[in-house]
Image (cartoon, rainbow, N blue to C red; front, side, top):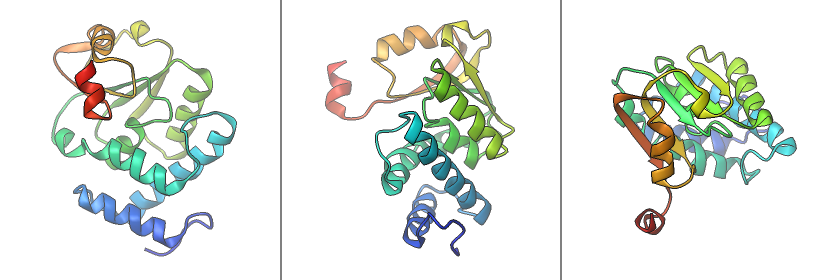
Length: 185
């Protein structure tokens, strides 16, 4: 794919393209352009609001985008609504929304600036399936089929929070990091 962003070097396009392919996702030019816009927007906002702990595009691609999309194969073909608790910079909800517009995704974020980033990015990328709820997850009146949480506290606390907004046979996916941390919980 040819260069589309002056700030986005060709080798980073190749990394993004190859990573998406290895995750079983067809990297169309539209999809790649959306990810470039997302990363560029994230880096602009990250200067004002600490969204992620890095300003390195390669780290954003490998550590955040690919990690978020690692569950795509599990979700593909499922029906139902998705809730991202403590969405922050939009991981995993924004990459999933970019890849598959059929998932109705709600990102919950209590912090105003982060919620504003999420809303702005959803509009910028024309993500009709992506909605932001600015507030506490316990204030949400809806119930969801799939609950996602990345870097959100301990599992027991997550379950306590999630059970108020999940449907009876909901799936909870918690991105937890190192196995030693999980075993400690």
